[in-house]
Amino acid sequence: MTLIRTATAADWPAVWPIFQAVVAAGDTYAYPTDLTSDEARRLWLAEAPGATVVAVDDDGAVIGTAKMGPNRPGNGDHVGTASFMVAEAARGHGAGRAMGKYVVQWHRENGYHAIQFNAVVESNAAAVALWQSLGFRIIGTVPEAFRHPTDGLVGLHVMYLRLG
Image (cartoon, rainbow, N blue to C red; front, top):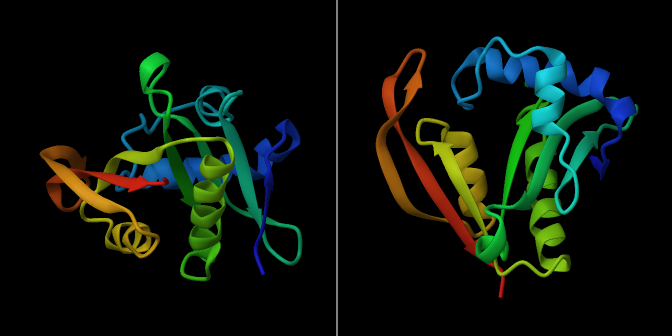
C-alpha cells in the first residue's frame, strides 16, 4: 500500500535523488539536467495555492513525488496541473497511479474545474496510458517539441480531464 502525504522540507533529501535521476534521464522532463539541489527544490516544492506530496512505501521510504496547483494565474486558475516523478525501483508497482488518484481528488476538493497536463512526452507510453486510464484525454500534440535522448524529436501531448 502506498501512502500519499504532504511533502515537507524534511523530505527533500529523499526527493532530490528521485528528481535528479528522472531529470538526468532526459526522457520525460524538459528541466535543465544540471540543476542544483537548491534550484530543483525551488521548482518542485510548491507553495499555496499549490501543493507537493510524496508517495511513501510500507517501510516509510519516499518512492515518488507529485506537485500540483493552478495551471495559470488569474483567469486561468480554475484549471489545475500536476507533475509526477517515481523512483526507478518503484515503477510499475502503483505509486504513480496512487499519486494520480490523489491529485485528481485534491483538485476536486479545491474547486478546480479541470486538470490540464501541458507536456506529456508522447513516447512515455506508461504515463500516457496511466493518465488515459484515469480519464484524461489527449486534446492535442505539439509535434517535435521535445528532444528525447534516444528517440530524437518527439511530440508533447496536452492532456485534459474535466472534473465537473
